[in-house]
Length: 419
Ligand SMILES: Cc1cc2nc3c(=O)[nH]c(=O)nc-3n(C[C@H](O)[C@H](O)[C@H](O)COP(=O)(O)OP(=O)(O)OC[C@H]3O[C@@H](n4cnc5c(N)ncnc54)[C@H](O)[C@@H]3O)c2cc1C
Image 1 (tube, rainbow, N blue to C red):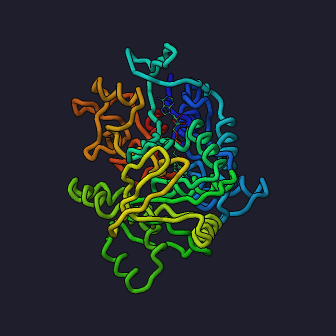
Image 2: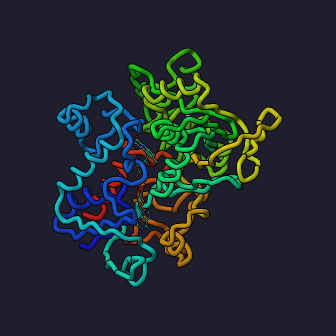
Image 3: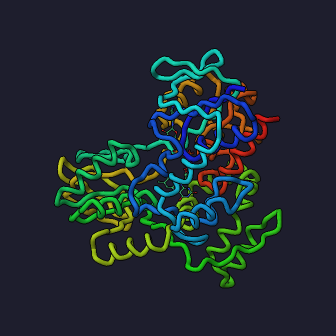
């Protein structure tokens, strides 16, 4: 069986590993335009300040082997089950997992189209496939405001990282658009690179990700089907909110599927910012650094919107009213991965949609897939050979952007290929 996989972040890498295990003898081509493997946007960082936002106990690459990562962490002498390991070390771990399976060819290149049963790369190479797994993951977004100062659209790209370093070298303030996990990463990078100016972080509500608790409260045992009202009542009665959020984890996909389209839209419009900061938490050492930066006045977090400016400054309209103007070296997009499939410029995604081989999900977040993760075409029929995994399937599953969820999905896809 010939299997082509587009994207060698966590999702594509583990789809390859699980497929190699489930389909012995398969010829697997793992394609990534970065030319790096077992890395992707999340684990390409070389900074020791960028920690996993999940404890080691939650980060096993394998669905069926929950202690796999903890054993590696202990063998490396870099912590234990409760450690928030640097993401660059997670990449070393994933690299080892990938290197241990036979039959995976690494192909550095950009996939641009599917034609006549083959994946076409930008250099014209064609990879014939029996099964194709789309694992393009976190697509970089665009700064959501028009500014005239130098701007970084994708802070995870090589060019983005270089531009951030250049901004850090100037004795000027820097504007961070977004106040979530990406902002936290970028703020730490700027400080590590010697930034002397102030960092001004702006988002509509100015919400910061909450820290993990030390030690963690164990999640409640929630019986299926989960009832949100019960958890809300327990939390209001004083039970730890983190435990309530965590206890939903095994049930989130089930709950999401049960919402009507209207309920999903309402969730996205009104609750999502709150959900994000409570669900996607930061490691305590990272939270302490961010608090210290705020305390020292080096990081200011504002609720508002960026409203233009000139070649040397930006204006922020504050949520509560009024405006502030900041002279800055530049503006960095920290809003996270692109959240709308219509705005993803990736040539392969665009071609699949244009050719009707795929269609957007009902919310326009990603690609429409069936319950076996097979991509649904414009005619409403599920493909018998194209699958999607990871954040591209967020519209269908919602809770499918992090390792603890994706690992089940990639195993399921591999098992269905074996079947
Ligand atoms: C900064 C950051 C930190 C995170 N930290 C954590 C964490 O601590 N714990 C956790 O569980 N989750 C974390 N996540 C969530 C993360 O989404 C998942 O852990 C996981 O990394 C998703 O991987 P992916 O392979 O789906 O996507 P990505 O990592 O985005 O990888 C996709 C890859 O596909 C390639 N690609 C895309 N299109 C093409 C194409 N047309 N041709 C060739 N190549 C292509 C890209 O170059 C990229 O390398 C983090 C995410 C980010 C962005």
